[in-house]
Length: 85
Image 1: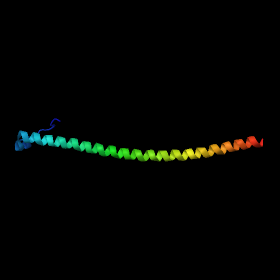
Image 2: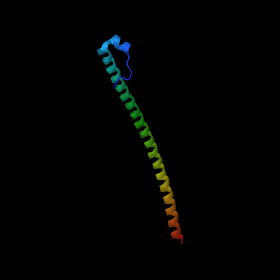
Image 3: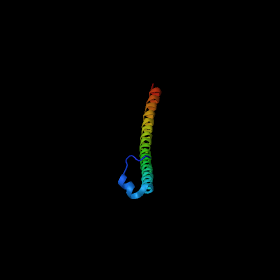
Image 4: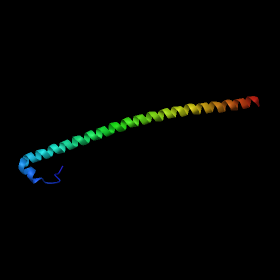
């Protein structure tokens, strides 16, 4: 990563090697921080996705039971109508 801004007093105090070492350390720390943030965000997303999918599955199961009840009610009334005819 290129240095965006020069810090002449810091470079003077630390020397060229010290300044570059400090820059490398800050760059590495930034990369590690970005990885941690990305890992945390993906963990939260996966947890939320799992929760939402379980909710959807429960709702689908409830709809299936409701649909089966209506189907049996319809079939029962259709059979009863045929038998009584």
